[in-house]
Structure formats: structure tokens, C-alpha cells
Image (cartoon, rainbow, N blue to C red; front, top):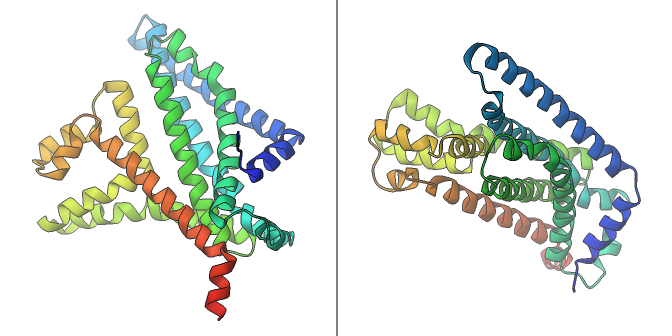
Length: 289
């Protein structure tokens, strides 16, 4: 079975290092703190509003899931932002590019290594997440849904990091640029909606809503709403707004989160392609000529 040589090398190096063990330890400690804090809130609410604490344990699922998504969104870009620029700093980048691997294989290898590491963290958290299913009575299909979205967030975050790493010569600059990209996706995509709320220009409405398809915060909010209520947050919102056309179509059922997932994947592969073009030595040679 063929395996990307970069993934094979990096996974072997990580498995022999204590850094990955300390990383999993810190990850589990953060989840444990969030878990005990959530249990405290559930217990306090149970005293005043309910007699059955077991049904309230369903609330652990979105809390722990969002916590892990946020952690992945923070650590994965750091991991990939230092991949290409780190090779340049160690003066091993030119040697790596003289191998038989294509630039796209190099980029995907670095990204796959970060995804393997993030999935290791997710796998380590499954015993805690299982409480929501075993005790809380949630459907096990939500567990696979959680794994799929964790994989999507890892791919998206890694693609941002690898693009910034290909653009910057220093790892610190690449990490800073990757977080700037995050701000653009989190805040920049809200600007059209804010302008619409201020000026109420009718032909801005569709564009202001569609930009939210690529907003990670909106994506996670819709995920939590679908898990806890079975309905998209946009269904009732667009009913009240009287939306029609493509906006109304996306609001029905799970179409919004499906369309948003496809768009995130498309942007991720675009970033990978741009990163591969950036580090392509043949392209640089043609530009010099």
C-alpha cells in the first residue's frame, strides 16, 4: 500500500517523541476541566429545574464537541504553518524538493501529518464523549457526525497553515498570518451582513447571507442546533425574514450545513493548490527566465 513518504517519516518521528504524549495530556486536561465545569452547571440547574440529571447529560455533547473544534482550530494551523517555512529555516527545503515528489505531494503530505495528529487527539477524547451516548441516550450517528466535522475542520485549518507556510520564510510570520486568515473568515464574512443590517439595501440580502456559508462560527452554531433540536438555525430565521430563492432552499433541512461543508472543502483544496504552486521550483525557474 502506497503511503506518502512525508507522512511516513513525520509519523515515525512523532511516535518516538514525548511531545505528542505531552500534547495529548494537555488536550485531555483541557477536556477534563470543561467536562467538570459542564457537570457542575448541569448539577446546579438540576437542583432547581429537574429531577433527572441523566437526560441533561446530552448537553455534554455540544460543549465537548465545540471545545475540541476550537482546540483543533488553534493547534492545527500552528502545526502546518511551520512545515514549509520550518524546512526553509533548517535549510532542508531544497533537498526535499530534489526528490521525486511533486509539490502537491509535499503539501498534501504535510497536511495529512497534521490531520493524523489531530485525529489522534480526537480518538483520545472518545471515552469522555461516550458519556453523552451511553448515559445521555444520544444516537450513535451523532458520534460519526462529530468525527466527520472534526476531520473537515482539521483539513480546513491545515490548508490555511500550509498556504501561509508557503508564503512566509519564517515560521513565526506564517503562524501570525494563519490567524489573520482566521479573522478574515470569522469576522470578514460578517461584514456584508452588518452592512445590510445598517443600510437595509435589498439587493445586498442574498450576498450578505451567502457569505456566512464560509463562516466557521456560523457553521458550528448550525451544527449544534441540528444536534440538539433537529432543525437548522436558519429555518425559522428565514421564515420570519420571508426569504425566497436559493436562501430558502439552503435553509430547509440539512442543506445549509451540507453546502457549507462542500464550500469549506473547495476552499481547502484551493489553498492546497496555491501552496503547491508557490513552492514549485519549476514555476520559479520559469519566472526567472
